[in-house]
Length: 378
Image (cartoon, rainbow, N blue to C red; front, top):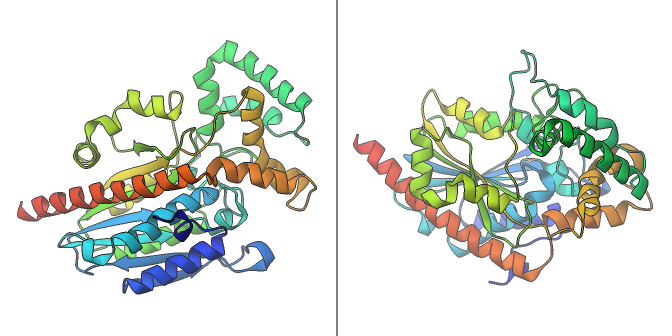
């Protein structure tokens, strides 16, 4: 496969290619324009959906790209590859595919993980009529994570404060506090928001409209980030004792979901999470159907020379949003560093994404077909 056929340089190019490929597959397409946010050059932004296959399917695979905006290039490429290399003719009988392109179009367009309001969509699925989860350790590290300038002295101060907190609470506790999700600092890391984000509201509407008659739903949310070269990390958020977890094991293999393997591929023990999209969607379909699947990560980042370099990467998005601005002298360089983290141009990475993405599609659709038929026979 020619990777340039499927990997796009911009959100607008990715969207144009996605819609053209979906039309060629005679997909039922819907567009959802963001009411306020705009992309570069003031262009409008859209969450698009494409339904491929029978409308009365007994099982549907939903795949999403761009939940963490900048990570959308790999997910979009995998969706394009399936549409072109597999297509409607390859679907098992009674199975349909619903593709959601650019869940977070603002982040996709600008090369950022968060939404236009700096919301992490994978922390936003809470009942905001109730008190949000507390994250007291984050409160202590927030001032050091958010300097006015990213320079050696500020990063060293963060490392010093981090070392103090690690000595007191442990490394995992600090990593967990930073990435678990927090609801007190709109300008901070992994901010979960104060109300349901626009993308969440649209996804809820899509699920309620398109999947209300589907008793069996598979789900893949494509992400990137951990150090590697396109290898897959399967993150299942169902309870390990549940039949949904057992079904995912049948699709992807028990080794794929083994916690020890996942932690090894991730690079450390995975932090906990709150407000996960999968849990919100699982709850949404629970009255009438089952949701099986989770996040699949394409490993993408390259190893950092030292801890300072790793910490600087995590500070860049926040600095661009709240300190320097998108037009700052450093901005172009910082955006390039973020792109190299989440959507690198390495040919070996792109080839691995396409091959491994298609393999995951094949495994999931085959497993979904068996599951759907078995359920229909019960």
